[in-house]
Image 1: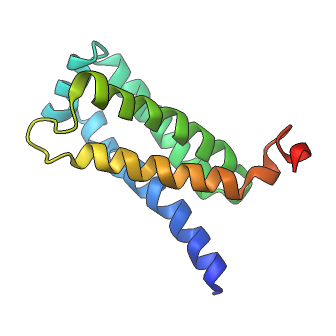
Image 2 (image 1 turned 90 degrees about the vertical axis):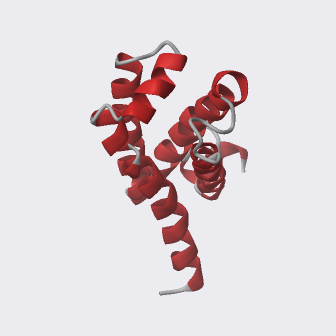
Amino acid sequence: MTTKSIVNAVLRITPAVILLQTLHFKFSAAPESVYIFEQLGLEPWGRIGLGIVELLVAILILIPKTTWIGALSGVAIMSGAIFSHLTQLGIVVQNDGGSLFILALVTLIFCVILAWRNRSQIPKVKNLF
């Protein structure tokens, strides 16, 4: 494997794993997840719906032809998560030490990098470069 392919794999696998590992908490109605979505006024449908969206985003990121779609979608949902942390939830939620905020930030950064690296696949954008 080349360095470029290793970097590409890490950029795709990291956000996908972060998104997938939170699904258990969303779909099992874990108290922490329920608390978050209650604070946002989105419990239970927001929790379940976002879980489904995050599953789709993770799959799209892992498929090379659809990585750009997953990355742009990841930017959108992680921007919403970070906005929620900054405006309603706080950085630290239920004494988590800010880990959910940090995971959202890491996922956002990786998705921005993936979108940039795959910009030539994005319709309309590829004509600009």
